[in-house]
Structures are given as structure tokens and as C-alpha cells.
Image 1 (spheres, rainbow, N blue to C red):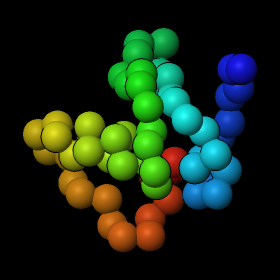
Image 2: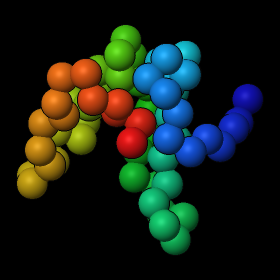
Image 3: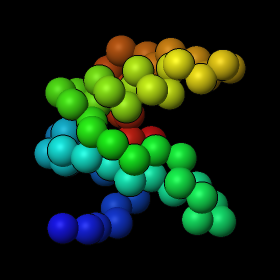
Length: 62
């Protein structure tokens, strides 16, 4: 199933298994699993130089 959603709540975002994320212009910036509480997504973005660690309890979908 494919859906588009703008800034979902944490509960809604956690219901998804995988994410295909595009930036403006249609370029893919992430495609893969989310894991529990988006652990894989957070680890991926925090591994990029210059990206700050997400604050505890912050909605990772924003």
C-alpha cells in the first residue's frame, strides 16, 4: 500500500513498517525499514555529518 501523509502523529508513524522518503524535486533521500520507534530511520539520519541527534520524545515524522 502506498500513502502520502503530512506530519503524522507518533502513533500513526509507528504503524508503518517501511518508508520511502522524497525531498522537494522528487529525489529519494531514504528508502527502508523504520523498526520499533523508527530506530533504523533515526540511526540512518544521525549517521549523516551535520545532522543533530533527535531529542527524546520528539516526533520523528516532523
